[in-house]
Length: 149
Ligand code: FES
Image (tube, rainbow, N blue to C red; front, side, top):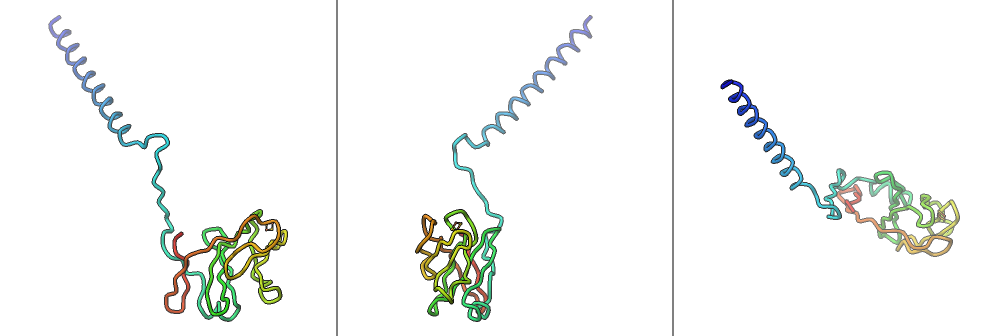
């Protein structure tokens, strides 16, 4: 009889410790969670400059199209100045081309014909609602890098 009461007390004491431990752990975990609506920290895995072309390539053709993490981009050499744009057409997202630079002097979207100013990225004509976004770049020696945006 005496042993049963002792075992029961030990069991209850251990159960209480276990429940207290679980309660403490869940409190600590919930204290570290972000509150709903709080801004979440976004960490870019590609937060480094990306080489997209050499100066020689750009000077030879006048433009270089590239892919930046799945999005089209374009580097242009206009009157000895380099320009870089996100080449995603602002109408429906087709990649804007530099093929019409020599013949028409504009960037042109092959899908519905929107045109953009190659020096500024501004919309010139067509259904596109706005111009192209510029991309920051850096020249290191003979290489051109697009900087994290
Ligand atoms: S997607 Fe470029 S003009 Fe329509």
